[in-house]
Amino acid sequence: MDALHPRLLVADFAACFAFYDAVLPPLLGARLVQGSAGGPYAHWDVDGQAVLVLFDRAAMAGALGDRIPAPAGDMTVCRVADVAAAHALAVRAGGVSVLPPADRPEWGAGLRTAHLRDPEGRLIEFQSY
Image 1 (spheres, rainbow, N blue to C red):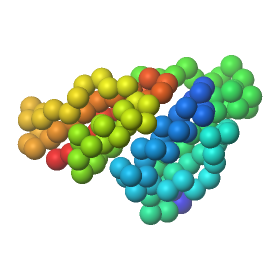
Image 2: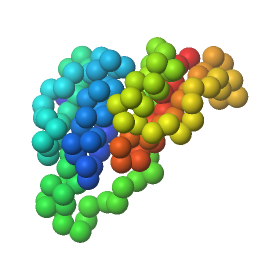
Image 3: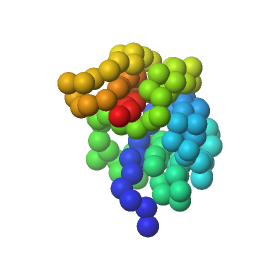
Image 4: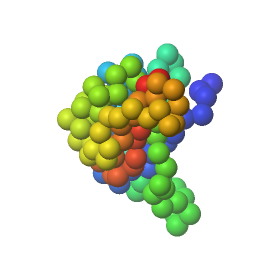
């Protein structure tokens, strides 16, 4: 059984797939288990546990009708070994930088973060400590 994991409902499946497929394997060691850029579903695992699922928003709307939620202002946080390298990789993969890598001692001893948005504007934080 997988632990809880995010399932992102995406409108531009191909762009989001390309972004997360370029970022998750090198940063988290995630492996694409199912799916492709053609959608409507894809998921990546780390050590047999799901870490992220993409699902096409239109496909979900077909099942839920008007009960599908609007995109949320949620944020995904990934602990990485090198915040600057993670940020650079994500930007090369199509992410949009929000805040470059910076030390955040006010948030915690030794904490370093960078923030960017995925192809659909979801906020991502890379952190190391």
